[in-house]
Length: 171
Image 1 (cartoon, helix red, strand yellow):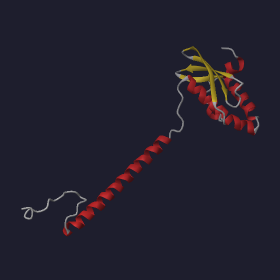
Image 2 (cartoon, rainbow, N blue to C red):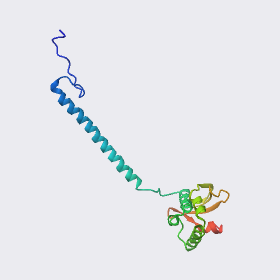
Image 3 (spheres, rainbow, N blue to C red):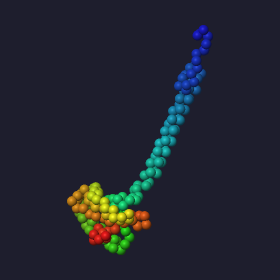
Image 4 (cartoon, rainbow, N blue to C red):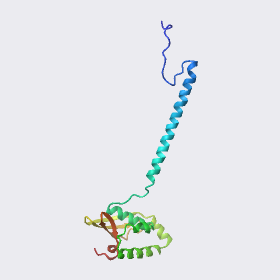
């Protein structure tokens, strides 16, 4: 009886049963491979596109007093005074202190500037005076023994550096 019944037909695209279906299966195998390659290309394209979009915003905007202080200090250490100036409270006295500090910093030797650029920021102490003023005591890994303080003030919801405190020590 087994000789009378035909063999079961497998509906798998990989199964090849007779000569007449070999061409069809071969085409299906290639179409599946092409589809897979096409899908891979689409995923690759989408991944590259997302990576490009994500990398467009290179620098995260600091929001807290500590983030702004770190960004300001890092920009100073890396000799990026134009970017650092954006974090300074806009007052004439602050502008004068900033310009004076910039001149003094730029007069340092190339080797010393490189050491500052490679230095890490060390936050020694954070002293919040109220909800809109805090003092950040910091140093860097190049000159660990020399600590500095920077006064952070929140004005219109934005944290800024008040250099008057750094140079005079008066609140």
